[in-house]
Image (cartoon, rainbow, N blue to C red; front, top):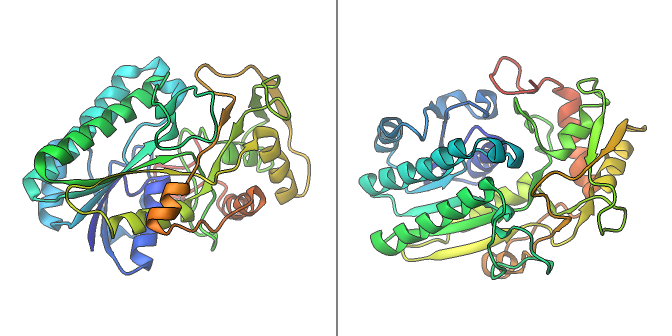
Length: 333
């Protein structure tokens, strides 16, 4: 298939892009490089453009004529969304509308969309299933839920098909150590921990120390980018017009922040300086997925089952690329 990957130079988008190429598909990455890295994809397969500029999308999509679209482009920081909700609605909702409208004009009827567990909000029952109530409590989650609604409405009205993936905590790096996570404004836990032994940060802050969990820190569900990419490939090969497939992508097990810290210490071979801090607004104490539907319907088989395996791939990348993709706009700010 010819797949137009929106946000294809970003962390998860580029992992899925490379996976598509290695599994027999053609792919073109479309990215504005505000957070993505040109070095994460082949230069001859990258188009620089913005989903906020419909003319950029039209030019690239009409020239490439894809069979399907994977849509990853979004702003994805909970604290930032609280401070600047206008930008989040403009990019995550307005940008998604521009992608959908361009698909209509180009006759593309299949989309796989990168959504988030943040659409569920603060739910008391874990693990979360696709039928769990969606009551997002922060603008980031609300904008992604609004985008989900819009995509489903377009599918029903215009003969499209979609798969909506609600990610939990994407993490890890390519096993060969050549590609990994590098953003100017990093918010993910594993790179933030590993920046300390690399000398890029003085300490790691653990947000939450007296929560109702086994060690007082937040519990999260961590999923390797290769496992995410496998799910995207399986979906893009199965979605047909009229489909509205919704899947949680997580491991089904929870790991505390302090357990992630200990896994990182095992990977680097020594203690990592850290400090405790109050929980951040909008952060639930526990967030765990049930991936049973993706396993059952897609035949999805995640490979990375332990946090130590995931952390080891991340450390291999960060140790050999401490400043991210050299010469690109992304990386450690």
